[in-house]
Length: 195
Image (cartoon, rainbow, N blue to C red; front, top):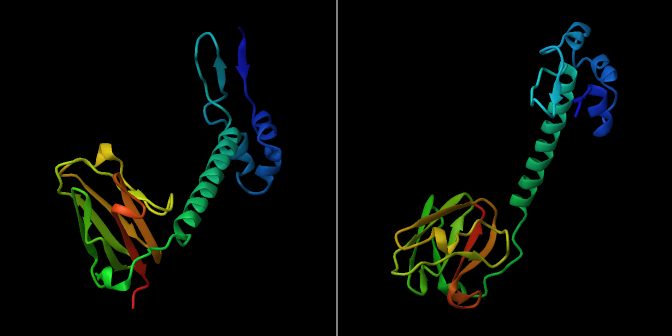
């Protein structure tokens, strides 16, 4: 097989970017920088696997595209994290332990129960579950994606799992091994705005 050469214009057209010359005219690079090769040229050979360097404009286009993709992905993730949970904890107020004002709240996981079962915390509070039982457990969020639960493989006796809750709302959860969302080993965290 022969060698395959990739040019900046090939990459630009493949990813629907404007021609590289128009990018350099928009002050991304000075004319001297745009014409100066980073390491001469880039050539991939299917037989030898050798690579020389690609012109700087090609690296710039590829780097810009990668950066843009990462920014969009990060922005989407932040929007997901800030979305208020829609699940509700169906329990009387008398069953909630008020832990507002505490920066860290501990929940003991023993065989077939969470203690406290229901708690109220301020936004920004770190909640730590400690498996003090004889059996492995898991923590499954009732509303998928509401917070980061933990699998049975990662939550054996003696293990600890922590989550910081930054968004107000109800976060019900359960151990799928020993309970359901509404029976046996289940609980919930109500996050409120700081007073």
